Amino acid sequence: MTEPETPREAPAEPPADNAAGTETGAEPKPEVGVGPWEGELPQGGHWDPDLLADGDRRNVVDSYRYWKHEAIVADLDAKRHNFHIAIENWQHDMNIGTVVRTANAFLAKEVHIIGRRRWNRRGAMVTDRYQHIRHHPTVADFVAWAQGEGLAIIGIDIFPDSVPLETYELPRDCVLVFGQEGPGLTPEVHEAAVDTLSIEQFGSTRSINAASAAAIAMHAWIRRHVFNQLPG
Image (tube, rainbow, N blue to C red; front, side, top):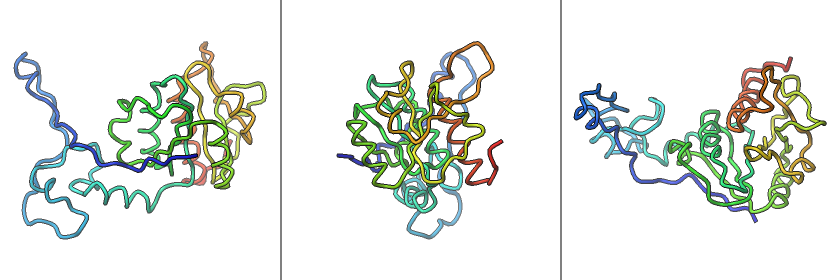
C-alpha cells in the first residue's frame, strides 16, 4: 500500500560557517538568510518567535522569512499544481534529491518514490521538509494508486515508441515518471504509461541526466498549464 510521507519539521539548518575562510585567509562566505527581526514585531500566527529573535537561515524565498515551518507548508498546499512526479529507486539513485528540490521549485503536488524507501536526501537541500513525498514499494502499487486518483501516467525515457515532449499535449492531471540513471524506466512502468515521452537532443551523448530530464519535463508542464503556451 502507498505510504505518504508528510513534510517534516527537522533540526534547524546550520548557518554558513565563515570560520574556515577566516583561518586560511580566504574570503569569508557570504552569510545566508537574514538576522533577527528589527523594529516592532509583526503580528500573526504564522510568524515563528524563535526565528524573529534569532534570525532565519533556512533555504526559503524571502516571502517566507520568519514563518513557522507548518505555516509555509500550509501556504504551499493551498496553491500546489496538479502534476505529480515519480522516480524509480531500485539502486539508491543519487538523482532523487535533486528531483525533489526541482519538484519543490515548480510546486508539484507530490513526489513518489517507487521501490526502496530510503533515498539520498543530500541533493534536496532540505526542500523535502516542504514537499509531500509518498512511497510505493512496487510498480503495481504505484499504478493502482495513480489510476485510482485519475492521473495519467506519463513516462519520460527514450523508447522506440516515445513521442517528443516538445510537441506533446501534457495533461493537466498527470504523474511524470522517471527511471533510474542508466537502466531508465522499467518495462512495468513503460507498459503502464499512457505515453512515453523523449526529450530532443542534438549532441553526441545518448541521454541526459535523469534529474535534468525531470527539470525539463516539469517546466514543460508549467509552460503549458501556468503560462498557457501551446506545444510547438
